[in-house]
Image (cartoon, rainbow, N blue to C red; front, side, top):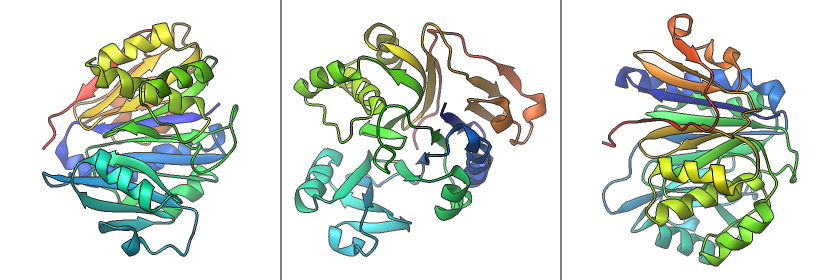
Length: 292
C-alpha cells in the first residue's frame, strides 16, 4: 500500500509549524505503511559556497564531530552537517573517508530522515513537530519488492535537493538501473523507487525541466505509481496512466497539500474550506516558490 503526504507553505507565516502539520499528516498514514517512515524537509539554506548533507550511521556510538563538517543537528542515528564546497565533492569525501556512513541527501536546503518502524514512533523519535521549513514530504512504507531497512525507506534522493516518495511498484527498474549506471547515476539499494529518483536526476542533468522529466516517466517507467517529488523550490505530483494508486490534492490561500487519503489532509487548518480534487492520470501538478 504505502502512504504519501506533502505540504507546501504558500504563506510564510505557516513555516514555523511545518513539522507539526507534516507530523500529524504522516501519523494518519500509519496503517498504510507500518514497516518504515521518512520525511524530507526543506529549510535553513546553506550559505553560498557551502553544502548541507544529511548523514546516517547504523552505529549508535558514532562521533559525528569526527566525520567532518559543522554538525547542525542530530536526530536518532542521523546528523545534518555543513561542509564547505560543492555537494558532489562533499558527498564523495564522506563516502571515501567514512564508508560505513550513508549520505541520505545533499544540497543546499534538503534534509532527509527515515527509519524502520511505525510512523507514530518515527515522528516521536525524530521530533518532527520541531521542524520549521518551506515544504516537506513524508512516506510510510509497506514493503513489496525489497527488504525493510533504513536505507530502503523513502524518501530517496539521488540529486541535489531532489527527492522522491512513491506508492506503487515498477516492473522495469532492474533494466533501467543498469542503463542509468552507465550514465553515471549511483544507487545504494535495490529499491525500485531509488531508480525512479535516479531517472529524474539523469533527465534534469541532461537539461530537462522537472515537468519534462516527469513526463518522461510516462514513457520510460513501467508499472504503477503515484509520485511526489521534492525540489529546492517546491514539489510536484504525477500519477501513471492508469492512476490506480490513490492520491488527493488540496489547496487554500495558505497551503497546498497532497496525500494518499483525505484523512491526512483533514488535520490541516482550513481543510474543510480547501479546494479538493483527485489528480488526473498523466498530468504533472507542480507548485514552486523562489528560493531565498
